[in-house]
Image 1 (tube, rainbow, N blue to C red):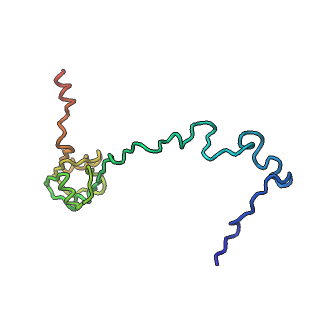
Image 2: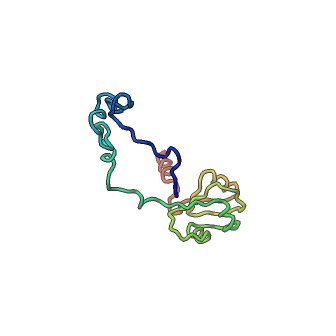
Image 3: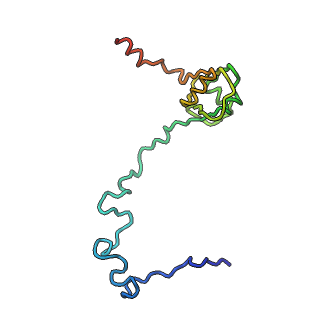
Length: 159
């Protein structure tokens, strides 16, 4: 048989039963004011526009447009890549045996890199990972479709 631990249940406070009870006269509500006179409904914010009316019930959600990014560490690259290899976005997904759909891949600075002279095409990296990769002779071509610095070429023509 289950037994409640000691102190699990307490007697309810009997309000408005005289001064000796400690909750006589005002019944624990204090003096005057809205809470002393009548009950305030849940969610009432004193006349301010309540939260349940400020927040939209339905409407736009950015979830369908969220980009899914696969993060890759150096240990993953050590397992699948060889020295001097060129790896594209699709090839890396195949090498890692990833079946889920991802929009991009990002290499993070985790662990130690044992491979050298790898060329990454269409793969992103963090700044610290890019520095380590460059020390190992790796090249990173983040987006092959993106044209090379169109902003800098237009400013040179103006000068």
